Length: 185
Image 1: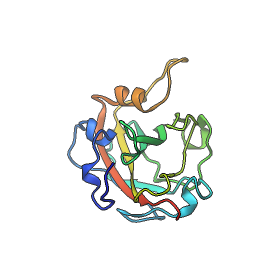
Image 2: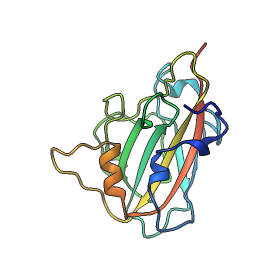
Image 3: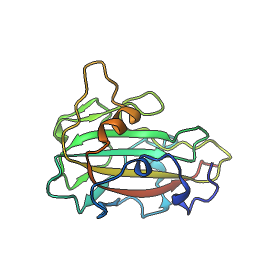
Image 4: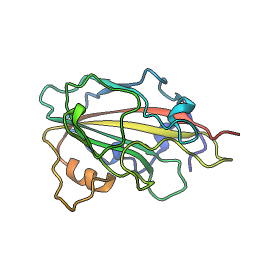
């Protein structure tokens, strides 16, 4: 586990570290709820209201067919990052993801985007919940510009590992927003 909440670069095995984009020009990922490497508000956590935060992005390549977002906590006490959100196939011209998206498999208001299972075994966004006594954890909101729609067989899981395999060789550009969250005392 990383003990330095201000050093998001030591996070191994993050999706953003495992994917090689076709362009070095990054997507700019921001949030109206928090700044880069700053605390994520309590209401977005599993200790609070569990509302997904608003996420904005720009500098998306014009040839992008879909966008994918993965939210990961590399500071969780596990071999792989804890996955808080898997969202695939949302439109590339979407200016932002609004706060408190529903936790449905399909999001018709977002171009029939798919939400996959997080590490808690639930579909959609799962708020931050570092164990009590832990220092602040880093949360990576990684956005990927994809050159095709990701398709899934009927019995195929929409989860981090499957999405990573499908992204391989199809990411035009990517960007990462890091926020922190500490457990309540």
